[in-house]
Image 1 (cartoon, rainbow, N blue to C red):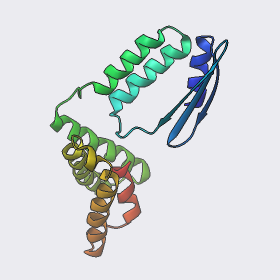
Image 2 (cartoon, rainbow, N blue to C red; image 1 turned 90 degrees about the vertical axis):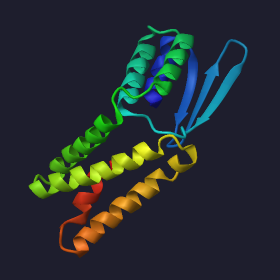
Image 3 (cartoon, rainbow, N blue to C red; image 1 turned 180 degrees about the vertical axis):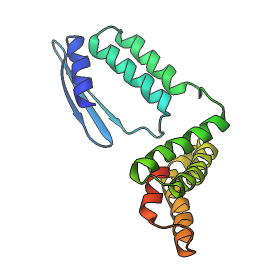
Amino acid sequence: VQNSLTRAADAYGLKSHITVGPTLIIVQVQGQHSVALQMSSAMQRSLRLDQIAATWRLVERAVSGTVKPVQGLDQLTDIWESSPRFSESIRLLGYALMAVGFGLSLHPSTGVVISCILLGLVVSEILLLTEVHAAIRTMRPVMTALGVGLIVFLAVDYGVAEGPLLLLIPPLV
């Protein structure tokens, strides 16, 4: 992120110093007679995969200097406010398939496929139900991890599943 922002500033001929941390970005831009400093904390929401891809395409255009800053900000707002491309049922299945893909890369077996489909559906349903509630979104990672953890460890307790760590990771990624 820091490298991309620095390259974008360079593309527009700006002297800048950029610091990026896990939850904070500090951008200092030096003008002819003054210095502007802007700080930004982490977003209060997560982006969908299509929004992430569109944001990176915009970053590539900014780095190459082919988009004007004002247009870039407008496009970024459009990306962040865009509605999902697919219906909720397709998004539910997509998340389950993504969990299956991660699960198969960790331990390819029929049990992992079934577990990842079921747990992926649980996680995606939680994500869909909580995406419109800003207050709940902040608790979503904890709620989701707790729910998946309870299901996995109960399944292990009852002898239905083995290797809880291999089952916990894919749906929570």
